[in-house]
Length: 370
Image (cartoon, rainbow, N blue to C red; front, side):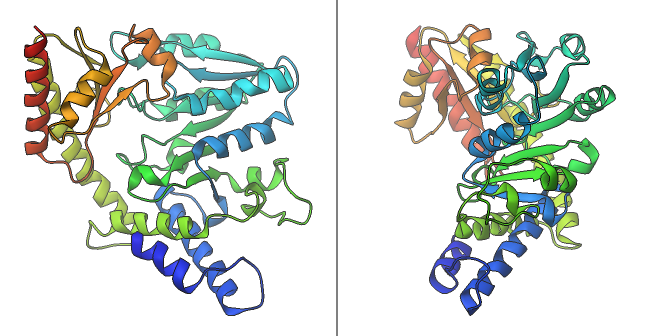
């Protein structure tokens, strides 16, 4: 990934659609990057747009969709969502007079309340914006079920796959979503956002854009000069993941890789869940290892803030996240708005030995507090 970025900047760096060699090379690299991310998401290259990050892309998409909404139209989000999948739609309350409906989660399990979801859907619903997986708890939502329910009443579906994409192979055709976004840095790439949109929708949406800018999909969804080196790096990250398998097309190799990562993650999350649950004073949140989840666990240590736990672990070279991770509503519902959660996530390179060190560190911290 780093080599791809360096190669672009050193040997090809130019703007697009000009008549000199490095510009043509840049066009080819961008096309290749769209093809790689299309394979990653199960889409077509002309359905892949790039942007600064998922949050910026979602605000951009919300503004475009909002131009077609009228006062009283409704959008559904959930309490499990990262606020990058809340704030862009809430902005339309002020700008367009739409109504935002928030589906509850079940605090005891960290899972979506599907009864409440069904009750929130109605003839005024224009969009369901749902996270594929909770970045705070690891909960995996049944987004295909949500899409079926939304489409049955004529609503569109936007999926936040930022936390899902590093752990499970995305298939936009299987999910049957209309839009989906993710961030390459989550799957070992650079800081760049990726937006999938059905080709017909990207071609028709009234995106804010400069009049001379390209009007065809997917470039019409992209503003200004893009992060070309980031595109090259994102494609290289996809190729890295595909390289963990040996045979087949890039999409087939990605499927093999993610099947292996899923099993690896299950083993690790069982170890982490079991080890943390045996420590007095530690509370684990979210679904158990037997439920659909990513290998990411949120927990708290009684009597300590999440920042205190994270600082103590860092002294032993164990780095964990802490706070609300922008999943603010979720953390508030769990009663942890003041202290926050500690979050430990497993990647493709995480080992059982590293988790043992983490568990021992948390045990030491919890015991010393008592």
